[in-house]
Image (tube, rainbow, N blue to C red):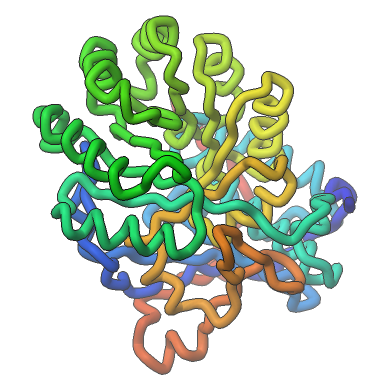
Length: 390
């Protein structure tokens, strides 16, 4: 395992490239958003003075925060260790808030810096982080609330053929107003999966505690693996009340933007933690949540951009899983010239320096799929000045 703390990053340029949305396999809807007919990808590329680069998925709609807080420190902080640089980056977003997009943007920059460090070192990120294996377990994810029964059956068959041992579907149809139909769909999917494949459900925060308990009661015979985000992610009182009244494992974490919230989730009874690397303020924050789950013997999984997330998940225990939202993620893979291989329900990472994914930028340009490019360097960015807000 290498330690990034002493790495020096003298950065010469930062750019964001936005790729055209790709049609999803099946238009996808959950309890509170959608349908999504297409899904896009934006990447940040950070280049140092020796022309080494690091890349990671990034929010492309918050460039004001990048320009005001993060980019100036990246461009003008010379000969600082990563530990010193990260501290500058972290505290620059204080007034933007540690629970919103600023924190996620910092995490996305941090992932790109980790990619840069490992590319120039010449080893895969998973080895750099000390992982003892090159593969991770995958669980299938999909089952949109808008899916027909035929579409549910087709997707379940796809995942079973791929070797997954767990499938997660969406509930909360019609903004939580069609629970009878939710229960019927859950029973249908359970009949397709059989006894050897676990079934989890995700309500995307739509219900109250009372509604969630009613759903749990009506699906008690389906042996659900977990119920994800059944109530509002900020309603800790509702989460705690629910956890106290059901033995079913309740999962939260995807909506969080700081690792500091997760001990509270543990204390109120959440039994399955789900941090997303691109949502938290860096690799270390994600790792802190992973370690928290291990200390408390809780379930742990992680999603987001699954093929990128796989590198971090190799550092977790064998039973921990990466979420693969097939309908959306499959289309994005057309942009990748290199990616993890999926075999027998696991992602196997390529022996590639840095993250296990490469974008085929030349192909994207040739096919006019590269929509926009934004570049920052010392010619168009001044040194950092604190953003004042009262």
